[in-house]
Image (tube, rainbow, N blue to C red; front, side, top):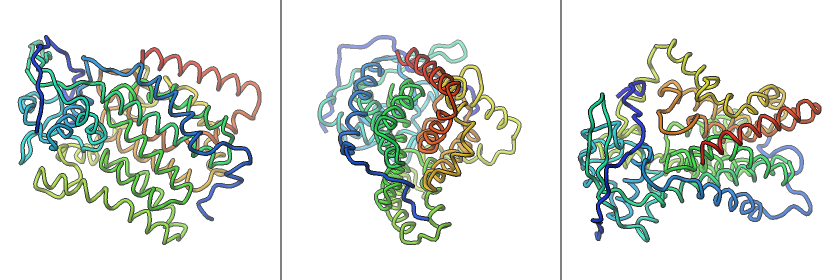
Length: 436
């Protein structure tokens, strides 16, 4: 189904009533310029915890743990519960949802039974919580409205708290790894923590990624981890992180590919080889997973040909409108609801000249991913949440370059400082309202 179809992103799960009945399932080098370690600087582990713990606590306190719940995130919850309690991604108890696409969850038919249309990466992270603690599910009558006609289904709905834990933890971890990367750039711990705070509270990281079991939180974590490992020249481990990203959101691996191209361009053959070796297991795992479910060697899985069809579409007028809406649309515009990013772009060109090549490569990969995403999907990403969500992974990839640009702009005078502080403050308030 085309992602421009208004029915594609219908909204959130609603419920009619919940029974008391429960189900129990038994069954140049890449090194940054300047010093990266300063005397008296706290260990990386402490910096990570100093960022992760407060953000995780805040995110979890505002995350969604009850219905209504967005259907995209609900799809991951159903799969995580199934994997955790049965060891299989087959949603045999949710087969009825195949008949109502875009209403309750994105469940599609496969050769082995009903499954999520999404790759399993996000669900795998939540599955251990369902396997060990939250095994029960309540039979719930879900209600949706389509063309003025009510539709209802009765399916097991597991506890949503594990999804909140994973969403909050992965988003907070992404910001903590970003802080460590900023330190590798030679900036102070204070700058690193400020970067994490503004990135986490002044963007959709808080209001969307940390709110429910979307793919965005896990995606952001793998992107941030991969870039952090890349800037430390741990190329095999960086590849493993990008392989995990591939299992969660295949197109986002463009960020890792951009880093690989950078290495090839610089003729750093051993590093490029290690990055590739690390990525291969993740790529192979998803291809085999899709072959097991759908009988073909593909990376698109349950999406079928819809994503590729939109990418190769020649409707450039719609694409241009989509780009404009994504950046400056009054309801969802990235630069409208995180306006400090609009100011930072003023210094991007000069910062790109000064930033290390790995930061520039990651930024280019993130930009390419966003352009691809907006070619295949409408900019709004559906309804049932506030502002934007598709730019979240690109922003994570762009973070090292953006912090260099921020520092350059900050140093130009008091007018720039007031403008940056004011727009960042507005963004934090706007996303706090959305998250609460």
